[in-house]
Length: 98
Image 1 (cartoon, rainbow, N blue to C red):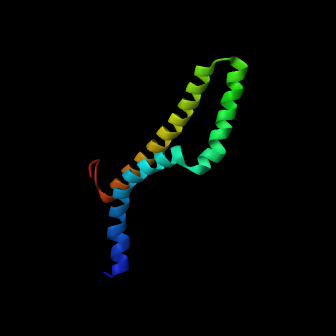
Image 2: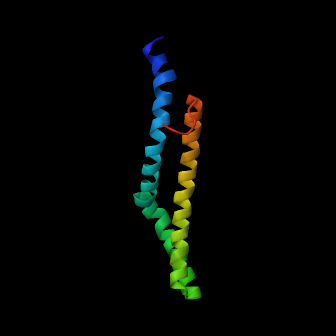
Image 3: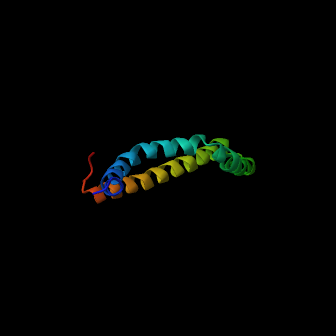
């Protein structure tokens, strides 16, 4: 078996299964800290929440809604990454552990 074939069939599938869990943590950190998020999503969501707050007068409830939206995005990404991790481990024949 050549080096390229060995890399593609043995090394990369094992490395992929090990990389998914740390990548999940980085993805959630990127959700919170990326400049793209702060340029696009944060001002849009904050503007909408400010509109809701000014029309209803419920400041705490409005910002709790914003907090809930970001929490839902983070949980959604985590669930997606957990599914990818399970699929990668299943391809290797591993159950749930490392």
